[in-house]
Image (tube, rainbow, N blue to C red; front, side):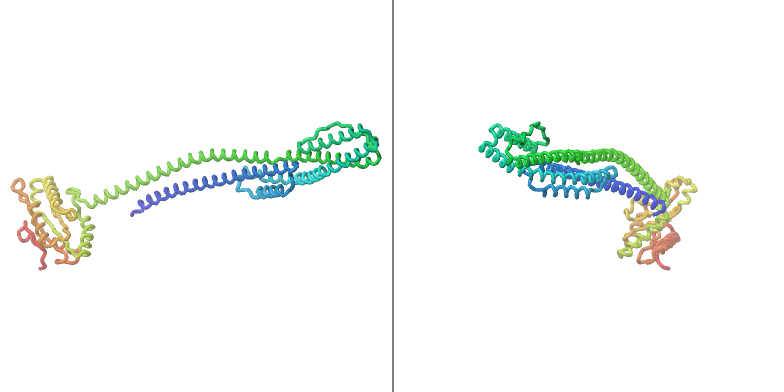
Length: 447
């Protein structure tokens, strides 16, 4: 393999490798981006779920059925842990996590305050029925002892009932409506009910104060809601996905250009390699072909004879060489001209090729000399081929010019076991045939 051929093949392999690496890189990057997108999408969904759970627990604190803060604490802990372990985020989304963490951190003390205030409020509401029962009992006793009138009893009862209903309503809804009730004059009550009445008013005042605190804390918590920031996070993520889609389209366009350029380069290199092979084969064939007859020349004989000899030696078969020299050919050139001589050579070459097997070798050795290499043939077969060859080479031309042939035959392994001596011995046998009158066949025999 020549240096140029090696370079072309190396360039083709390098181009293919480059395209393969580029394709793998794009596939890996696309796969990584999609994996990251799936993780971020799941992460945002999880944050939304946790935020909804946290808000639900905050709302439940105002419910009559709220009994434990364990669920609230559990949700907050999970929420905090989720924010502390985000997936790998692009630069545009990374700042969102610290903002969410800071907001949750500020929100937690308000939740704790709301928990404390709700506990006080709930205790007050739980104690309220006992106070009312005591007050109503005291009013009934005072009325029976004629310490207060029926109207006074009804006045105080109505006031307490309205205030209690208002307190209960405030617990069920998230606002408090001012009733504008006038507090009855405590002077209408006997001295024994004054401490109970004052305690009742104080308890109602504390109840309303806790409720007002609840409202304020709830409003502050609403102002620090996480949902808008999560929505902003989600919006940035959507914009990031849109950017990636646009970038991926551009990337695919460039990839297509690179692939086309790579395929064009590979096509050019393959064409160059093919052209090199064709030229190399042409020059190689031309250098081993006789231009006049189309037969192989001495170079082809030098290349193929070792192959035939090696096969005969490995397979323990025979190899015969026929060395042919045309008799009277000089007269053809001198009398009829070189074109007529060339025509005769082409005719004989064609006849020789047609008379032999495909694996036999027909060589124009030079001038009017031919060499036949016959594989796996004993002396009888070689003699029969030689006689047929002698017939093919014999012709009577214009002006009574007679052309014939003298043929010398050497045989492996009976004559020699040396490949280089085979053609030489056949040549010697051919000269022996010429000396014995031409137009004859002679096997090589040692002198």
